[in-house]
Each structure stands twice: as structure tokens, then as C-alpha cells.
Length: 447
Image (cartoon, rainbow, N blue to C red; front, side):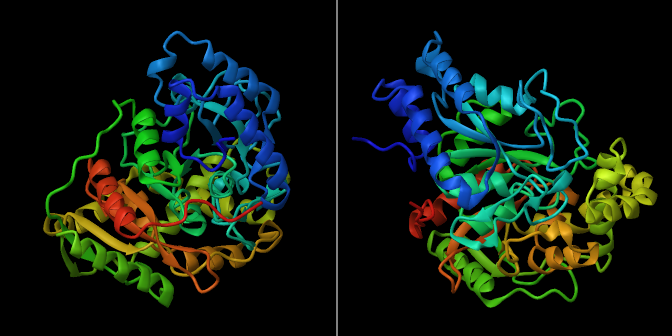
């Protein structure tokens, strides 16, 4: 008997189109795996068992069945994106438990491509922090359940890493795709600004947040990105020799990068050098003001999202974060600091095609009730382990996380690739080269 849980989206969709398996059979097997494992992982806020099976039958009955790029592929959706008929809680007791009237544009595109939504995944309250825990659930890293899956797309990442779905939808405003992907051994890409639609009504953290895929392979990441972007499925095309800068330095003064993550970046640099690319050590000219700029936009984005919510129902860390951000709303909305950062970094990216860095500075914090701790404890924990992601939300340029090597615990390690605007598929080709020459195990060993 063929097992479909743990297979890639590309494998599943091909089998469904060729009628080797039905969408209902695929959905049922993944739902059974969710029921068996999610009590230990905490990936899902809600599971749509009956609705998903009905959707799978609808996919099988479609007239364009044979041309659907995600035919019958189970997908999980981050719980800050509307799914028709389900509430969007964003990890908070302050949000209404009211079913959405229609799908978010990204969810609609996935469904149009034949995907089946099996559930909505846990997030930290208002998607603020890099640990996914709160009053609605805690997402753990399937490779090391004592550790947080990361955030804010932590539930989506945990679902994919545990083989409960082959792909998941998330978004990234300060690293919220790349941080959990790096923790959980997944491939993800934060597209550049405007590649994937944000959708009406999204705050988008002043244009910094982008929607994107979480997957176990580069092939699935490319496939899902093309669906989200409304492109034809992108074919592989080997890039010519690229100029790759390798930086092991944290963008934030006073934050160091631990040895496993610098070793991963060095290992990836060696792989790309053997693939024919010109690889050199070089640090981007990060300004000393970067920490303040990041904090201003991080808190102001939260203030914008919390504006119409009952503050008494928010956790303390979120209330403080939003209160600190209110005076910065106009400053963040103007975009002046972000434009200044882009101008400062553009000469570096004129000299180099791609920047390679560690994805994180150290492994994720212990899984637990971080939402019950103070604001400063949360900010320090987040900053100390994930200082390398925020600059690329501020610039609006594409960036991705790719597995590379392992931590001493045996959990995955990862690197970050950053490119100029419009180079999403070029970054994916580099990631493909890393995957081919340094293959990684796709999912955590959970039974």
C-alpha cells in the first residue's frame, strides 16, 4: 500500500492527476496523521476534517482536474489568513470567533489550483513574536519538541515538518516564515514586495509582510510560489556563475552568531563555490541605527493591528508592544527609514548578486508559555536568536531559508539567501543546487 503522508506536493499532485490515488484518499491519510501526532506538536488551531474531505471530492469532480498544479494536495493555512467558513483568530482572545465570508486571495489561489485546506495553524498573538505560543495553542518543533517551532508561522512550519501536510501557507513581516523554517528544517521564501498579493484589509506592517510557502523541497517551494504569484509553473533553469557574498556577522550590534550557524553558512558557501559561483566573504554596510529602525516598525505594525481590539483581552507582552508602537505609526507609515536603508544597501547588491548568511544566530527558545512572560524577556529572546531576518522586510527584497547541516541536538540548521528585487526564482535555483549537493531529510522522525 502506498503511503502519501510524507510525500511531496509535486508527487501527490502528479499521482492524483494520473488517477493513481483520489484526493479523498490523500486527505484522509493526512487527517489521520494529524489526529495521531498533533497532540504532541500543537501545529493546528482547528482541523477541518469533514470540510476537507468534502473539498477533496469537489476537486475530483472538477472539469479542469487534469491541469491543476496542486490537484488534491493537502495544505495548512496560517491563522491570520481568511478561510471561508472558518474564524480567523490570529492567536488571540481579542479577535472575534466569526466565520469568514470569503477566502483570502492567497487561499483562493491555492484552492483554484486544486489544493485542499485541512486546517488553520497556530500563531503567537497578532503574529508578533518568534515563538508560537498563546491562549489558543503552542507549536513545538517536531525535530525537538522541547523547543519552540519558531514564529510567527510556527504552526504552519510544524505541520509540514511533522508530515501532516506537504505544504503550508504563512507570511513574513520580520522573519515569520524564515525563522520557523530554519528551526524545522524546511525551505521557504519571503517574496519581494508585490510578487504575491497581500489582499484587501491586510495591515501588511506598512508593506513589510509578504505571504509565502513552507515546504520540504525546493521543487514544492517553487511550485507553491508560482501558484501564489499567479505565474505559470516555473521551470528550472540553471543560473550562470553568480557573485555570492558570505557574511557571518549579525546585523545587530551586540548580538553574536553561534558556531553551528556560522559553520552552516561556510558549508553552503563551499557547495556554491564547487557549483561554479564566485564566493567571497563580505559584510553588508548595516547602519548602527538598524536595531532602532527594526523596533520602530515592529512595534508600530503591532499597534496598527491592535487598534480596533479590546486591549484588556490581549496578553501583556502584546499590549506593551502595541503601546510602545503607537507614537511611531506615522514614522513607520512614511517609509523614509526603509528607503534610506535601501539606498545604503543597494551599492552592495550592485557588487554582489546574492548574499548568503546564517539563517539564525542560535536555536529557538524552549517551548513554553512565553506569552505569560514580560515584554522585555520576549524581545531579548527574539532578538538574540533571530537578528538576521528583519533587514530584508525593511528593504522589501526577497529572502529565503534553506536547510544546511545539523545542530548538536540533531535538529536541522539553516542558511539564508537574499537577492535583489525580482530574483525569487534565481534564489530558488541556488537553493536547488544546495539541496542536490547536500541533501537533507525532509520530515522529522515522528510516529
